[in-house]
Image (tube, rainbow, N blue to C red):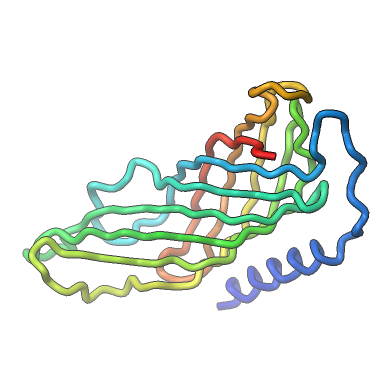
Length: 201
């Protein structure tokens, strides 16, 4: 419980700081929008085992993320992740199929401007909800503890932006990775994601 309150306090601080940050934006750089928007395709991993003997799981949970740099150092956005696995739960009641859909609102503070040819470190948090579904091949009810639950997760990450400033395709691409710690609910634990981001504006 203390971890959840601490994480919530961090997120509130980050959100408040982003809104009270100086309204003066960064100077324009030729060929580069100082408030870019990114869309990323992500694959991830989880350190936790939601059930005792999972199998048939996705090799990597996958999803999408969007970020808008509202200031040179501050970004807001959203992340959508999907995961699934199966388990017999140690019973002769048929196979259970588990699915989790995890949307979140994100806030991040960046140490780098995100310009092509640059390296960026960032930190922030996810504030969202984990939607949980389970089905059984024999129609049996699930009587376990996994349920829909809030999702709060501070994270740190890095991004490598390719190319040079200009209209080229490579100047819009970057590699991004995050390491997060979910501090709430039955799905809490360390997890990460990484993928390719494209600057859409």
